[in-house]
Length: 111
Image 1 (cartoon, one colour):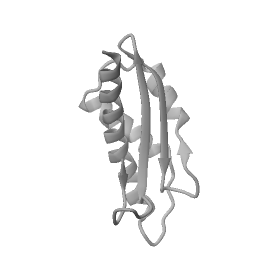
Image 2: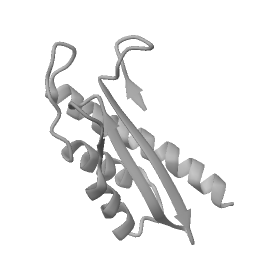
Image 3: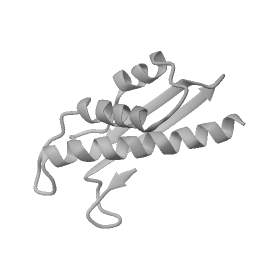
């Protein structure tokens, strides 16, 4: 999931998620963000939180919590394209969307 000013531009913020479900529980997850600093970042703390939390259902509350964790895990920089606050907000929104999309793919693959 990403936001850019125009198609093909560098992302103002982007979140990628790969997620695996085994026995109805998140067993493996990778979360990376880009566009919010000098280099892409992997959010291992948020990943561990999801695995330790034994996430079994992804409801609106869980999505909001995970989006907030993703947003708070990064301290984005400001530049001419976007402020740090805007990028941090985008991370939460995009993080929730990316988690939901990865969850849906993983549930389908687990069938």
